[in-house]
Length: 177
Image 1 (cartoon, rainbow, N blue to C red):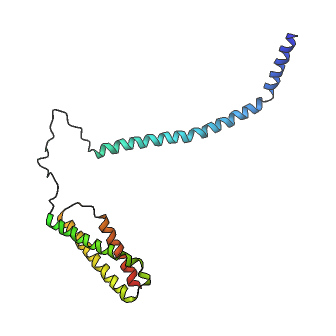
Image 2 (image 1 turned 180 degrees about the vertical axis):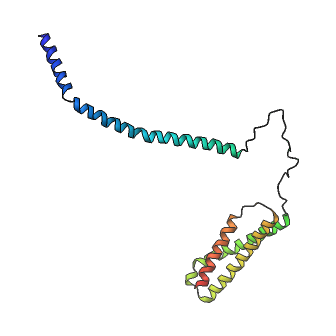
Image 3 (image 1 turned 135 degrees about the vertical axis):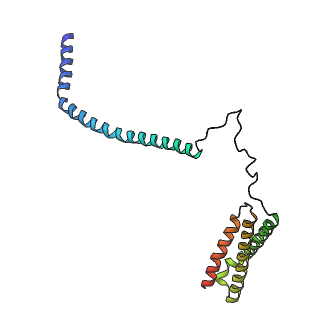
């Protein structure tokens, strides 16, 4: 009886293997085509990543100027004695005057904000008064910015520039009415 079981098991596996032989060949061909498709993006990604890495290294080398760092015992030729230590000179009087004008112009813009918000309900005389006030504030801001630039100071003037832009936009709107 043991032999019958063995033969029947062998017969079953033989029949199982015989049927899908043609399907296996087709499956292998399809699997090979799919595996080629799956490898291509991976291969392309690897090549692109390598190229970007090499480009980054070349760019970093070019930015550094190709100079090697100095050794501990060596000194740099043309040391800081030839360079100016603080950059351009700042004229403190001109700078202070420019900042004062900018602050005065910014103060006028901030004082006019409640009137700017209700400008749609104002009569023509009030609108003309607001327009003149904004023009004066814009003039002060522009003059102050020019003085700050002339003084040679590197001050952050974003707030003043934003106020000038706001004045310009409000004046366009007021002159359009």
